[in-house]
Length: 271
Image 1: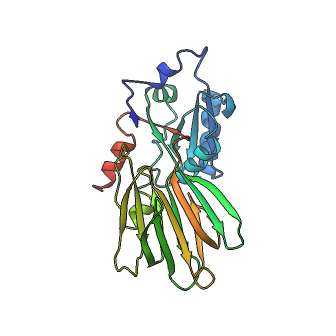
Image 2: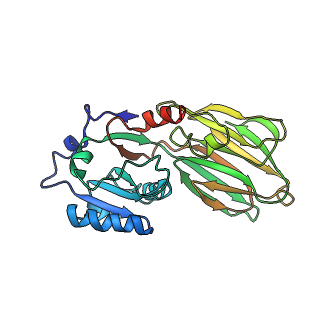
């Protein structure tokens, strides 16, 4: 859901707080991000993240995802400023008028995916993913996957380099590179996309309702090892992966007016 700045500006959300807006800064380890953090904290102060009204993340998209995951237990929304490369989830970097930009920002609420992966040794790995959960071959031979949706077998054998399930917010990331569809941010659907499908030949995937529970079973895991990733957090040698949307978790992301996720997803398709 996109909340417009006119309907619900961040400034109005903080009318009940006394004193100036409390901004907490987080930065990646790169020199350019650390330099930006030093400049901004000297100018605007630096509240502990636990006490901040808004968290400002300085880095690239990877660091933005890391910040969203590490602060998901906090109520403060996250506003990113690009000190990385692509910066799809980030706003332009500018040292001036930060408070005014934060007060005018639009909010996008994003629900992540939950992943439950079981390893060949029986170990269970759980993680959340804002962009996508992916399965990738980890050996010389293609992976063989069985796909079940909501308890119903949908594909007995998919021979491929991998497969993924993406959220609307993550549909322009790895999913788009794998020729998956770009999903409108407000849509209640998930993208199930194959990575280099060999059988069925050129199978690209499917659109599923957001409430769907997707299960991948790895066939011949000893001969054809597969790894699972949740927003780049990797788990090796899995035998099954269960993926579903996690509505109880909400990530609040802030964007400059007119440059929110909805606009970015549309613009990405015309570049």
